[in-house]
Image (cartoon, rainbow, N blue to C red; front, top):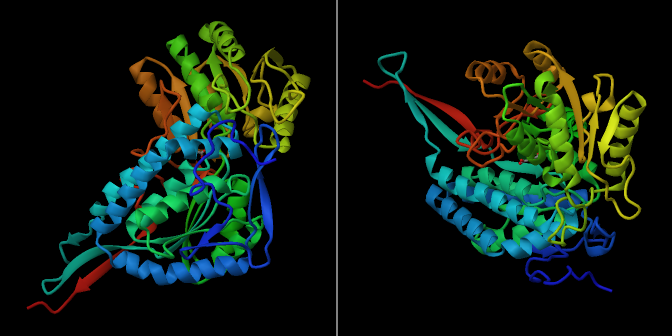
Length: 491
Ligand code: SIN
């Protein structure tokens, strides 16, 4: 029986079972495919082509030819295409959200939000495309004039994970296309359908052939090796684990390629005695349970100061106990399934390790639900720094609460990680707000808010969470090179 989408099926124009190379919708030359499944029930949604390294090479050749023409277009032309792309994404929001929920599991309402979020990058960079300004610099000699040009890097390879199947590709396509680059893109194996739907809309928006290709493949290594070694690829933008980021950096090293790496996190969430506790509980629910705990910026460690510890824990536990777990297609659902069995295993291992070392379960369950990859959102108290949850990203709905006494101690504990992506704290004392925001060693700090992601701000980490910024007025820099031109002999 074919997959039903529990109601309204998305338009066939968007629900693809072919990949997109050089402007053509293609199958694998040898006919191989892989299945895309709904994690809430394990049913197969579609099969998509399992493309080879040779296919990636074809896409790169086409991108190389198309990029020069795309870069020669006026900024206005590129902006117009990106704006049309944005408008089409928003017009088809419901279909895109259904595809996303089917392949990834997040609740439909959250999926609709992700479509809007992804589209906001298309719009933002449509506007930024017109502002790729150069510079003039007072010269060092009377006969010279100095200019700075900003030019597209060339062909960009992009790799994204499964947790934001639509927003993450948009976040990479938009600045690259605005800058005048061409993109060869590999979506996660779990979630290629959202990316193919986006490609169909990009094609309809007027992207020239070859400017965007989507390679569906189960062989991530072959794709990574080809884009890192192929001399026609000038840049790789990657979102995923630190482990894979490290491998790609090593593979790219001989070619000295421009890179941006958005890698793992281990976000602290600190509640000080002077915080508004109810607001802190709301912020914690948002930052911990967004996408069922499966975002790189999700809170991983919660630190609460002595004076508000007990009341915060009580209110957080009540709020978490009210969250509904179920299929993302059910409007009552707050938290969908986890993406895989392996994700459930990690959740269970982190709980078992903490409990063995003395933590208490305040709500939730130490094991998964009997069917599918569903787990109960869980709150733990009585945590210590020797537990796995202190050092590893759980990437699941587990809220471990640590107790602390003073500011220096908590800043030290929060910074005691090799990661440096997002961090959060709640406090009202203005001096403390400045002090702590400056001392937290993370690329992003949310103060009195649990939601920091937006197209207008620079998203990115430090330390082993990577480098490069996505979104904001800085987001184009990663896709541009700066060229200095010295004009001499001026009489
Ligand atoms: C991520 O999980 O890497 C991205 C989350 C976001 O855009 O907020």
